[in-house]
Length: 265
Ligand SMILES: Nc1ncnc2c1ncn2[C@@H]1O[C@H](COP(=O)(O)OP(=O)(O)OP(=O)(O)O)[C@@H](O)[C@H]1O
Image (cartoon, rainbow, N blue to C red; front, side, top):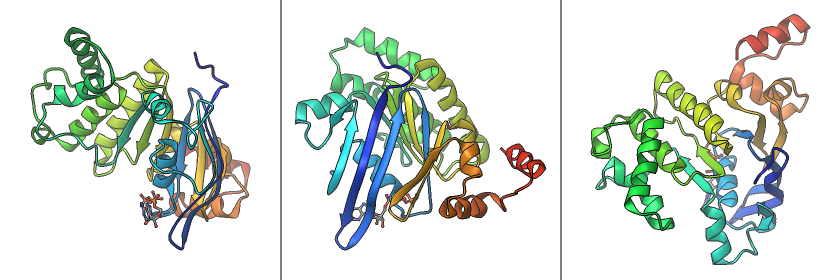
C-alpha cells in the first residue's frame, strides 16, 4: 500500500542529449504518492522527454530515474514490465486503434496484461466507460466519436488497470474550452475515486494550477522549482517569474494585488 508520503518517482540529476543538443541537464524531481505534479514550460524544453524517462522509454545518459524505489536503468525486462503495469498513460494523440470498437480499445490492456476472464473484463470496462459518461458507446468505432469523446475513451483505457500513476502529456490538445474542462473534471473525479498519482505536462496555464499540488517549470535543461501553484506564481526565480508573466500577465507585488492574482485562478 502506498501512503501519502511515499515517493513514487524520483529523478536525480538526470542528463540526456540528442547528438550535440543537451535537453536534460541535471533534472531532479520527487513525485509523492496521491499528488498531482504539473510540468509546464515553453515548447521544446524537454517536458515529454522527462515523461519518457519516467516511463522507462528513454534511458538517461547520466543520473538515475527511480520508480517505486527501483532504478529503471538497472531493472530487468520482467521488473520493467511489472513497473509499467502500475502506469496509465494519456498522451495528446490518444492513439486509439481505429479498427477496434471503443469496448475493445478499453479492454486491450486487460487482455494483454492480465488473466482476467471475459466477464471480469466486461465489468471493469463497463465501469470505466460509465465513469467517463460513455455508457452505450462501447460498440462504436473511434472515427464515429467526437475529439472529446475519443479523449474520454483514452482516459478510460488509461485507467482500466487501476494504475498507481497516470501520466498525461497535453491531454486537452485540440479540444475547445468546454471539452477540455470536461477532461479536467473527469481527471479530478477519477483521481479522487481511484487515488492515483498524476504527472501532467500541460500548456493550460493558469487553469491547470487549480488541479495541481505541485508545479515545476522546465527551462534551461532543468526543472525549476517544484512547489505549490501559489508559491510558483510568487516565486523569485527569474525563469519562473518570466514564465508566469508571459502566460498570466504581470506579477503583482502588493497584498491586494496578490489576492487579485489568486482570483484569476
Ligand atoms: N528521440 C529524439 N531524438 C532526437 N531529438 C529528440 C528526441 N526526442 C526529443 N528530442 C528533442 O528534444 C527536445 C525536447 O523535446 P520535447 O518533446 O521533450 O519538448 P517539450 O518540452 O515536450 O515540447 P512541446 O511543449 O512542444 O511538446 C526537442 O528539441 C526535440 O526535438
